[in-house]
Amino acid sequence: MRIVFMGTPEFSVPVLEGLVAAGHDIAAVYCQPPRPAGRGKKDRPTPVHQRAEAMGLNVRHPVSLKSEAAQAAFAELKADVAVVVAYGLILPQAILDAPARGCLNIHASLLPRWRGAAPIHRAIMAGDAQTGVCIMQMEAGLDTGPVLLRRAVDIGAEETTAQLHDRLSRLGAEAITEALAHLDTLVPEPQPEAGVTYAAKIDKAEARIDWSRPAAEVDRLIRGLSPFPGAWFEQEGTRIKVLGSRLADGSGQPGRVLTEGLHVACGTGAVALTRLQKAGKAAQDADVFQSGARIAPGTLLGEG
Image 1 (cartoon, rainbow, N blue to C red):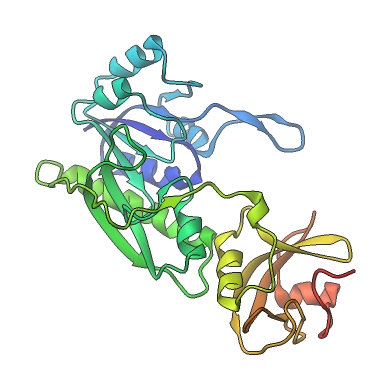
Image 2: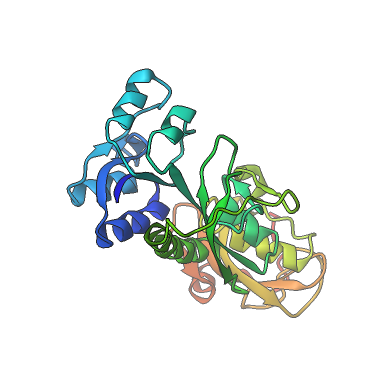
């Protein structure tokens, strides 16, 4: 098929690679414009931009698709279908209507659960046992279109957003390839009205660890916000991110360190902190972190 690919972050890259490997004709790649990044604040192309250029593909990065000129340029590509995955711009109706067979979105949840911006984070933070990807026919509403194909996976007991992100990215690449191969026979299924939830964008204000919460909630917060923005606590004036955790035995005053291995008491139960990062330093496994930090049992995290 002749495809316009629309995606921006690292999540989208395996999908683009999968479409090329399957032999599809990529008419153009749309992504977000380069933006200032790094210490020098120089414009940095997005992951999709970099990969598409390396593959010799035609890259476009308009700031908006609302103008008649932008919509005309898109229509002139005469695509069979547009494949959209974490693009980051709202698609006007003229864009949705331009490809002969419409626009297909790869969404990282089992719709209608977790429509919106942060479905992977929210699934872990909510304690969902399963998530997955859906191939959805796009329409004007936010992730409301009928689903052509869905693939479910279990969420691991210690899985972080980073790990689940990578699994779902690969699954999305496989699912869209399958969907395009069987597009003539797949039957779009309208999303049920029951079970709709919205995955709001992650607010950094959510990231401070409240040790008074039950251990299961603290563990899910840590894993759901790893690696970004990273759940954190402050100790002796230093912010420490926690990038990995698991449930542990033990109880005590919330925030009290119970063992050398950084088992910490919560409102009920305890969590083991397995990967940590001091501000400005590299992330470390707990044993390596403790060889330098030496947070002793009995310490109350968040004090001093």
